[in-house]
Length: 504
Ligand SMILES: Cc1ncc(COP(=O)(O)O)c(C=O)c1O
Image (cartoon, rainbow, N blue to C red):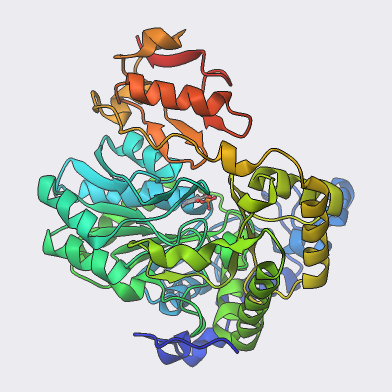
């Protein structure tokens, strides 16, 4: 049995109403389909499986075609009392938010909205951010014109995993430069940061805290899972319901929490939403949030089963020679206060294989897919409420490791150089992004301003962002990673980084 943890706010049952058993928006789509509407309008498939749309119906199912309807239909999503608005309200209640927006373009849209809104508060031109921010955060900087002040997260260089920030790091950074704060929690590998501590620091400096919880849509829905950041003092929380929430691809949420910035943020977030949301958001994908929310709220036993299965998988991993559970050593990192139990992070360094090789062999030879690989680890995710075949996973893992024994050790390759310090910021990301750029030989790029972001994988922390000066140190680091058999540079003009795009 896993030990349920004590929650400040607890299981949604403690804060949600009986209305959580309903799916108002999904039901409204179903009612609409049941009326067999005659659709002289878009979508061109007219919500029927006939004629040219037969192939589509064969592909996605007739039911899906019948419920794929446009926006602004009376009785569905028009007006403040519509089933759509009620569905957003129920989502806000379930995730502990004051207000929630359904997003059709993933957490990428949520991050852009969050940066646009936080910058629009006018507290500062600067936004402080964890350097391992997702690229959509940088997009937010480009759109808003805000200036970033980066804070380097804790990094496990050996395994190629980056973690998060501590409240102390944030306090020191905010004392130097004040501005809204953006952090990522949980990390890709399930490391959870001290959100109450980070929120307290941010609020003490008079700025809001944005938490990119793209990977934590399931948090707060079971006592064995960490709390959701809206209930821990964060002001804006972005989460991908399509990742660990069980909704369809692209579906995501932006939550505005209750706190000192609620009133100021609500109107600017609404404007940022209008700027970024399509006017034809898919009814199916947004209704999938409604359905997934209900399943999460009511799915206690199924969530418990997944947590226990993940626990069992960790035990199996520990019993395989050469493997370790990477999260067993998370306690060594001061920024990690909790771990997502549904992420099983497997350290493969002692097997002689890299995480990339293990992931590829699992997929190609056994049709077993894991979410992430780094140089020294892979991470298997158990979707909330899913119970998967552990015997098949374990035998595939054992087979891959046995077949790969004797390869050059990942450990040698893992002795990658430590991360270079970022070069000085010479223009805002926005100015750099839209400026005229040229591609020059790498050596000539030193001392010039980068037009794009360059991030060496592992561990995927951007080493250069648009507007930063390219230094000898960062270039040497990036080229060394690009030349190693296990590394690559995201954003590079060519794979070896012989050339670099700089401002003209
Ligand atoms: C930390 C983080 N934030 C945001 C995103 C973007 O999420 P989405 O794919 O839902 O747009 C990702 C995507 O992987 C991510 O890892």
